[in-house]
Length: 161
Image 1 (cartoon, rainbow, N blue to C red):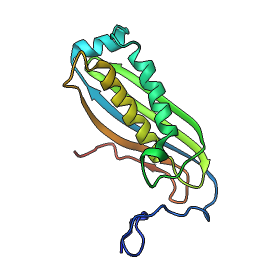
Image 2 (image 1 turned 60 degrees about the vertical axis):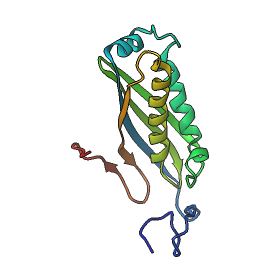
Image 3 (image 1 turned 90 degrees about the horizontal axis):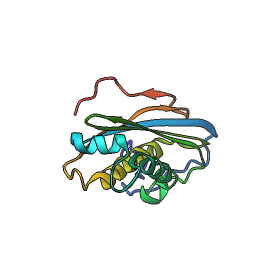
């Protein structure tokens, strides 16, 4: 029917059986950006947003999201994560988020890294929306993955929209 691993021969969605795969070290890194007004960016950088420390809360939200990915992405396996790191870079026009997830397991952690980056960005939006409701989240993508049967992968440096 398809080369998509989450579809069976009849086209029905199913969870991939990873039982026969070997345990390997795996890591994935994802990124995204939230653009905002200079006022909102300044409030985040200076720690003066009314809801509190936006970056600290976004970091915790990203970590929590990675740990719960299998609860919100229907066909993801629950994974014993060995590391989740959220790097937040405040800029004059927004914040760039980079999320790293790692495990020693039978399947990759790409979805955990992407979920972590996405939720960290959504948390920034939530905490700064009183200042700027027109913020734009964009560029959420996988930067790299390491380990597993398919090997290592790095995103191309140029991305088309």
